[in-house]
Image (cartoon, rainbow, N blue to C red; front, side, top):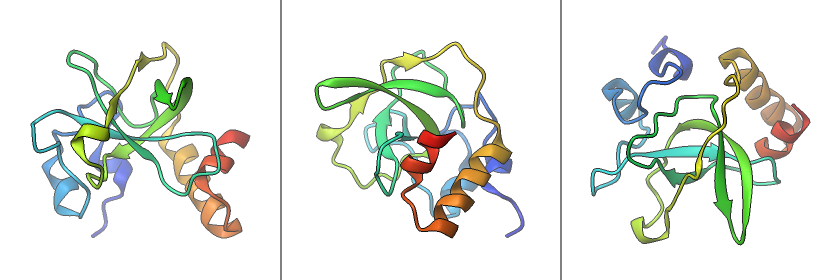
Length: 129
């Protein structure tokens, strides 16, 4: 397949509306029909966390969002569609999107490459950006 993840999702487009992405092995919307997205946090985690997108909030790849992490509120980046591996009862909702420009696709691709090349958790590489 010649398309990249950036081709399948455009900034601001609902993450659950791209049927081609789900056919490539990425998760679709939650079984309840609620929208989810994967958010990469600037901490030493190997994978992004799944969060529910509240009704009326539109987020796209690269958008900076505020999310709950334990008792704290932290800033993360929408990294793609949710993995769907998390029980629906455990998924928390985003607090909202920040009114700043999204991380461009080439920067997100570069961060993924650096993490893979240096065997560093992607969240720590994001913290450097």
